[in-house]
Length: 218
Image (cartoon, rainbow, N blue to C red; front, side, top):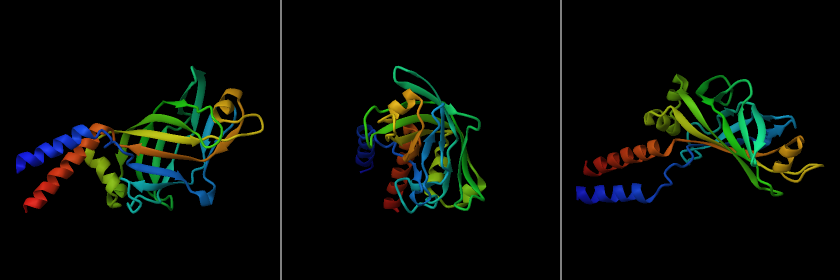
């Protein structure tokens, strides 16, 4: 029986590479007009009413409702349609309590790539980078959040970070791609995610499977 369980778990790991699902998902608080804005001169900033929507795909995780503070970004010149994006002054991203009095997690946001979508309407432009030097604070440990515990127990010092910026249109442009290329101002909605890198996620799934097997034996 043990051998069959081991084979099944192994096949699941090998056959389903999608275990690296978003760990922390966040988006602007629509009731407080959260959004991104671009000044037309290379600075991408965020209204900081950005809230955690889900933790480990759950809308009831203790981290839900916390505030994500995204650093202001500098958008560099384009190369083959690709923009280099990096923190402008402060590179520290934080997740704080809803009252902004406690820090639950902090990390350093690195340089990433932004590939603008050249279509009109609801198309999304993706920005991807790494979060390093992950620190879960004592307040974060005491929160009872499953996703923060998963990050802590994974032993990782890095997370995958991704933003999806919703395109829009202005007086002189019809997409985010044209906005950047033409140096126009703009703004719209967005969503984002921080994910445990796949190897660590698979390890966590493995530990979960072993715990399940032990529980069944008991």
